Length: 444
Image (cartoon, rainbow, N blue to C red):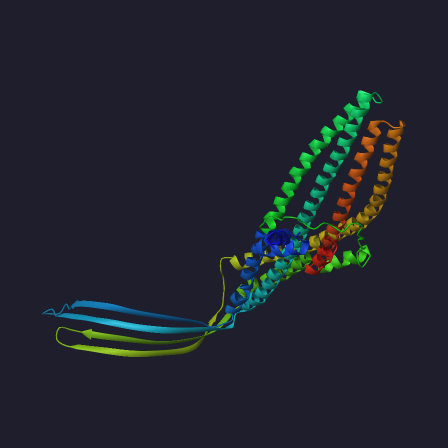
C-alpha cells in the first residue's frame, strides 16, 4: 500500500497537468479575445458613447429650468444742491431668487437634431457589429497563422530527420566504396539548408504566437489543429452573384455609409432651420427682498414676480453664416452619397475575392491532396531506385523536399480556404459566433 500511494499521487498530478495543458480551440480563443482585445474594447466604449447621442438630441425638445439667487449690500450717500444742502444716507441689503423655465414649441433645428441623433445611435451600433466581425477575422487569421507555422516547423524537422538518415546512408556507402563523396556533400548541403529553414520556421512560429497573444492576453499554449482528411464544404448559396448582391445590401460598411448619407441629409435640414423663426414658452417666478435703513428710521419691501408668456424670435441676418453652413451641408451630403457608392463597390469586390478564394482554395486542396499521394509514391520509388543503383542521392533528396513542401502547401490551402469562408460571410455582413463554432467543429 505504501508503494501504491505515491504512484497514485503521481498519476493524479500527471492527469491534472494534462488537463491544464489541454489544447485550446478557436472558439475558446475567440471568447478570450472578446474580453481582452484592445481594439474591441475601444469599439465597446465607442458604442457606449454613441448611445448618448439620443438623450442629447432629445434634450433639445425638453424644457430647460434654471435657478438663480443673489444677495447685495447697498450703501447710498446722497447730498442735495438745495440751500442749505441736505444729506441722505441709505444702507440696506437686498436678496432675490428667480426660477426660469423655457419650453421649445417650434424649433425645427432641434427636431432635426433629434432625428439625426437616432441615426447616430444606429451608426454606433453598426460600427460595433463591424468591430465584432473584424475581431472574428483577426482571431481566426492569427489562429490559422500559428497552425501554419507549426506545420512549417514540423515539416522542416521531419525533412531534417529524413535528410539526416540519407546523409548517414551516403557516408556509409562512401566508406564501403559503393558511392562517391558527391552524394555525401549533396546530403550535407541539403541538411545544412534544412537546419537554417528549421531555425527560420521556429522564429516565425514564435512571432505568430506572440501576435495571437496580443489579441487574447495570454500565451496561447497548444492549439487544436484541423482534423486530418477533413472535407471543406462549398459556400452556400454556391452562386457568386447572390453573394455579391448580398454584400451590396447587407455589408456593414454599406449600412454605415447609408446611415452617413441619412445623417448628412438631416444636417441640411438642421442648417436650413437657421432661417426659420423659433417659438418658446417662457415662465419665471421670483422674489426680491430689500431691507433699507436711513440715519433715523428703517423700512423694507418684499416683492414676488411671476411671468408667463410666448417668445418669438425671427432671424433676419447673421453675416452669411447660415447660408454658408447650408452650402457646406449640401456638399457633405454629396460626399456621403459618393462614399455610399464606393462602399457598395468595395463590398461587391470583397465578396467576389472571398468567393473566388473559397472556390479556388477548394480546388487547390483537392489537387494538393492528390499531389501528396503522388509525391509519396515518387519518394518511395526514388528510395528504391537509389538502393538498387538506378537513382542518385540528389534524386531522393529532391523527392523528400517535394513531399514536405506539398504537405505544407496543402495545410496552407486548407487554412486559407477556411479564412476565405469567414471573409465571405463578413463581406455579406452575416459573420457571427455561429460561424466560429462551425469552423471550430473542424478541429481535432
